Amino acid sequence: MKRVISCLVLVMLLLLSAQVFASGDQEKAADAVEKPVLKFLGGSIGVFGDPNEGPAKEALEAITGYRLEVTSLPTENRAQALNLQMASGEKYDLIRNVDESQFLTFVANGAVLPITELVNEYGPHIKAAVPDEVWEALRAKDGLVYGFPSTASPILGMAMVARTDWLEKLGLQAPQNLDEFRDALRTIKDRDPGNIGARLIPYTGFDWWRWKHVAFQEPFLSAFGLTYEWIEKNGEIISRYESDGMMKYIEYMKGLYEDGLLDPDFAVLQKNVVDEKVTSGRVAFALYHWDSMYKTRNAWAAEGKDWEIDYIKYPVGPNGRTGAAVGSGVGVSTFIPQFAEHPEDAVKYVNEFIKPENYQRLIIGDEGVHWKWEGESRVPILPIFNEERGNMFWYEPIRIGEVYYPLWKTRVNKIKGMGIAYKETEDVLLDIVLRNPIGMATQLSATELHASSLRQMAGDEVLKFILGARDIVEYDKFLKKWMDEGGAASKQEINAWYSSRR
View 1 (tube, rainbow, N blue to C red):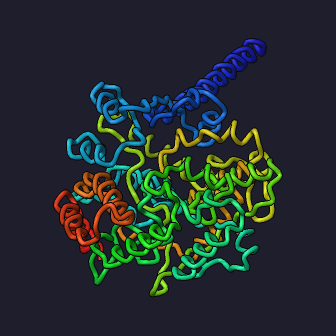
View 2: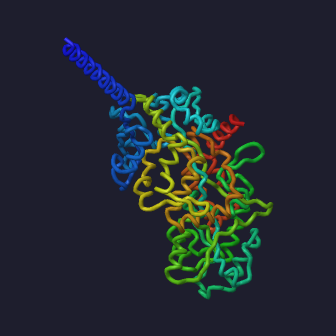
View 3: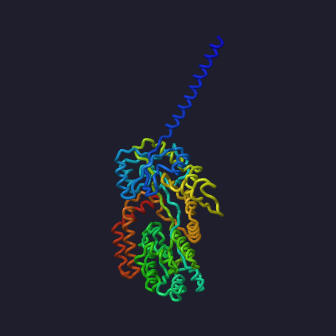
């Protein structure tokens, strides 16, 4: 009898044990249901590989707890491809890298899910990371926000460089103002410290980083209060082409050109041409980018040259003006379409990505594994940094520029000379950085529609004035055309926004 009871007890224990394990399996199954695979449509990845494979994606999924099924848009005709994807019935949970005007069209057509309530419920780290002014900038007329924000990192671009060995040879200091700068150019041209004759170029530069047109030379524009295309004056926003400073800028640049102090090829300069001229050792001063600077120095070192090139501060203008443009702006980086099957989990994924203890690990990895300290700088450990974090930008659903910037500076140190050149750019520009007065403006449809054509028109005409191909007395005609072809509509729209935010 005791044996029978013992057997019954054993059977009951086994059944109970089986129920416990089954319950555990059910809990695991429930956990799996709570975190579905998210369908993620991202921007073009070019030739960088398969975004659904590799150690970067493995790290992403291990850290956030979410698995992604990634589809990428083509490099060309991206907008058309996205329209087709939106109409295809494919139920993406997140869509990234959308053009601002296209996004606003999707919103107007009811194709985008508002995220305000979802973020309030599931996104505490999103709310903590995004400044109030950014939420306000993205808020639509109905009071809702329809996409996850992206704010530009305050990355510096072009800066002034000089052949400091030439300055030293001639007993010159780096020029401090516009008059001294012109005098230095004349002295260098007359005395030819490099003994290179007619091949000497006192000044050259092409701003490929920001304005994409040779007519816009930031060191001199800023001296006349024209650092950005739209500037604040007497409580309103005006175009820099309406400012008296633009005429003074043209007159100054025209004087340099007439005196033979600008590159003789000034009208047709491009980045690669400027790089070649600086690297060939023929240029005294240039508007130059840190990505080009380190390559020039490396080339000189490889050739055994003892030439020296260094960044110098911008010359100040007649009223002590100076300034440097910096990356700025706000927009939508990612949105949830109305047809998404897992909107709550989409928000949870974004929340896990931006979570402080996750974000740094995702972007630059772990200390001692992916990066190390060298002095005050974090330097990537190669090749593991590139292998495990190099392509993390594929999966990035949100970017807050001020948070990303120190991590980006780690990434720029992947190449030692590049990191050094960027640090030198900071040293000469950081204390004169000016904030873009319309950097937080969004949903400016007229302004965005006309921005590219207006900039091209202005660049072409300002260049003509500088080179003497068009008489300065015709400036008012240019300005009227600029205003008629979108400038006036843009100004009205910008000032309506500006007034609403004051």
